[in-house]
Length: 241
Image 1 (cartoon, rainbow, N blue to C red):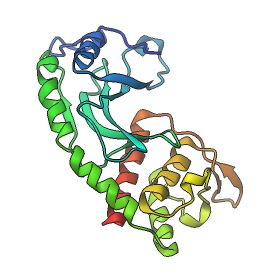
Image 2 (image 1 turned 45 degrees about the vertical axis):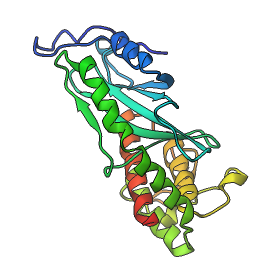
Image 3 (image 1 turned 90 degrees about the vertical axis):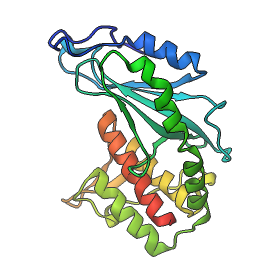
């Protein structure tokens, strides 16, 4: 449920020009986007509720289409009304079979729009810049699906991946499960999705530093989720090269 308030945090200066969430949402709706998912940061202080960072996943098949029928391209919009985040637009995608929401990495452009009161006028150009990257993303996913990893490559991939979640964890501490028949292949794209699902959703067993078996917790913090997601994408890009 969207709980964002259409007002800025009262401690912010007059230089911060809030554009109401409804105005921004109406702009994307007029461009043909629909909301796929909404998430927000949990806050401890009740005075900050409704102002915190939130992220919306939008889709628009008319301008964001892909040659891969197993995924949906998405526009990720991150914002806050507490002065701690610009309006950020970036490219993401959703894999149908596992319900994974993924984010492109640092090799793709993010667009940041400052809260100056001109956000609505700048959204068209920002969306054009994001959409211009779709062909490269499509080609990158094709490469990931084409390259099959051997056992040593899977170990190296996992070694780099687990550090994103816990820098003390090693590949030998965790076993990535195959949860469905569609995931029973070792191409880069499928393995990347298996690892992402385990590290983000949690529930996967691992061995901690004391030798005890534990389960990974779900990552719910938007910032951490994006950091891990972007890092995983970049690792997948490296192994698909």
